[in-house]
Length: 254
Image (cartoon, rainbow, N blue to C red; front, top):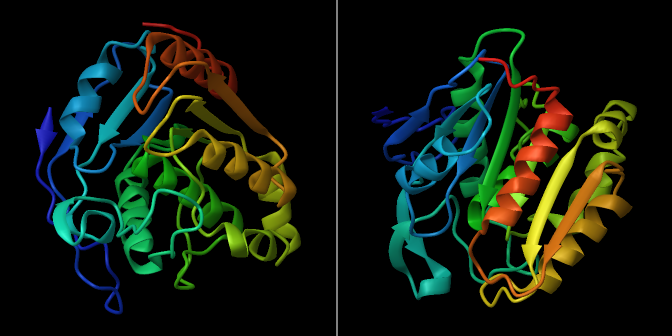
């Protein structure tokens, strides 16, 4: 199932971004969780929706949006689907707060329509993983990067082959209040990275994990895979399934 989206997800002080089509994978069993899954650079929601539909997770509803098409500095300004503008694929890249806020707000809006009592989560691959991790930061901090209130309660975040944006300011945000520190300390994150990744180098995934842990995120799981490049494999997705089942308390019921 898919539907279009023209949401600017912007309050009046935010620039308008035109998001693409959203694909939804309905739960095959009792609905216990909804996860927004974000694709990588130049991709769309359709490709990941097909993979997610095949996973043995009958209690999860997957929402797979498509990023806006925008010029990307890493490609010399060539336009493609991207959750935010990026100059290099690492935590050293300048942070496009405006673009990240727009995408994280779009994710929050998609999840805000879910029924009460449903666990909410965000996951993604590559650039999508970075927005997933950024959503975890916004949730812990209680605000988007522009200072607007973060409106939903998310339970888990998964990031595959990505990196942590805003790493330089993370510790200050987590320590800004007791509530932020408490939310960060108890928030479950799963990061996965291939040691042969030649797009987002393994060292950036490793470094992102270190920064999260040293900034007060105590429940971070980091899975690594020898020989894995910038793509996913069944072993990795098996680990994702097991982790989500455990952390969300999924019972597999149909």
